Image (tube, rainbow, N blue to C red; front, side, top):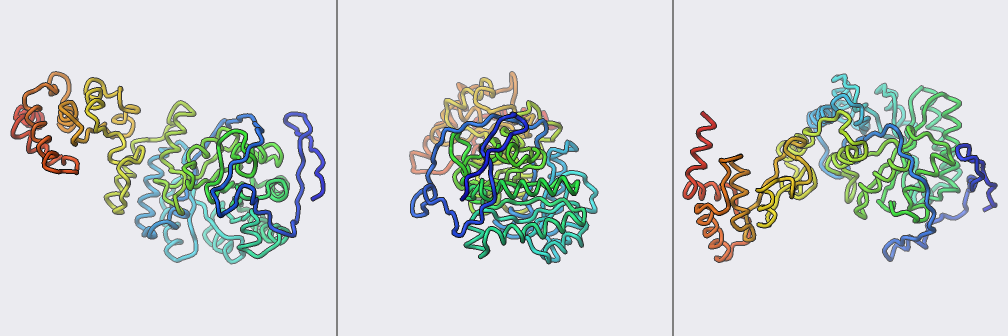
Length: 464
C-alpha cells in the first residue's frame, strides 16, 4: 500500500494521518490479533483519543430484526404489542428513536403496516435490507423514510462470504445507496464486522465517500458501526480495529461523519456489549442500537433496558422516559411469550433485587437503601425482595414477612419475635433433612398462619 499523505483536521487545525482506499489483492484477516485457533489478542498502542459526548444521545432498537434471529419469530400481534410497549417506554421523549423491521415475508410486511397504523412518532419504523435491488424494491413499496443497508466491510465478509474484491464491494454498495438517495430515502449503512476490518484502507475511505454523497444530495446518510462478533474493546489504548474509542474518533474526525449520523451496534460475545455501547456514546456516537432483553444472535445484543439505565446515569435524568414500563416489558415476555428471563438478570429478572444472605436481609430490614441499588419500587415498580433458604437466618425470614405482607412502621415484625424463631426452626429442619431448594412463598405463608396470626389480622384489616 502506498504511503498516505497527512490530512488537515479542520477541528483541531493539526495535520493527522490520512487514509485512502486500498483494493488489496488478498484479504487482511489480522492474524496477529485473530489467530482463530487461539483466543483473540488485545494489542495496545497506547493511543488515547478525547471524549466527545454528543449533546443529544439516543437508543435504537433491533428487537424485530436481530432479535428475531435468535428466537421463534414473533406473531403480528406480538410485534404490535411490543411496539406499543416501546412507545410507552419512550413516553414521547424521542430517546427510543427508531426500530427496524424485516420486510421479506408477508407477515413481516403486515406487522409493519399494523404498527404504522398506530401513528406513533417514536420509535420511528425503519427497515433492514441486503445491498440488493430486489430488497430495496420492498422498502419503496412500504413507503418507509429510512432503511438499513448491509454494507459488510471486513475482508472476512468481502472475500470469504461475498466472493468479491474490495472494489466490487465498494461499487455494489454504492449502487444501492445511490438508488436510495434518488428516491429520497435515508440510507443507514451497516458497516458489518467493523472490528475485523481494514479501517484506513476501506472503512474510512468508504465513509468519506458517503459523506460526500450526503452533502451532494442533502440527505443525511447514516453509518452504523457493527461489532458483529462482539470483538470491540472499550479499554483505552487498544489498537484498531478493536478499539471502540478510535473507531468513533476516526469516523467523526477523519471521515467527518456528524455524531447524529453515527450509530453503534454491538454483540455480547465477550461480555462487553454494554460498556462498548456506553463508550461509543462517550466518544462521539449519538445512537446505540439495542434489543429488548438483549435477545439477538449468539450471546445477544446490547440490552435496551440496560442502555435506558445508562442514559439516566450519563444524563442525570430519564429524559422523560417511563422506566416502569421496563417491568411491564419483562412481564410481557414471561407471561405472554413464555420467555424465561434468568432471575438474576439486572433490572428485568424476578430476583435482580432479591437478597438471600441473612446479614444483607438484616440491613435491608433496617433501611432498604443499604442493600438496594436505587429505589426500585418507585422507579421500576419492583420492590426489593428476600428469598429464604438455609442461610437466611431470623433476619432473612423477618425481612421476607415484612416485604411480602407490605408491613411498615410499627407493624413491622422484628427478627427477635418468637414467631420468627419458630419459623426458623422449621426452615432449619427442612435443610437438615436434605432439602436443596429455596423455601417457596406458599410454604412460608403456611408458617405465618401457624406462628404469626397478627400479620394475617393486619392484612385483613387493610383489605376491609
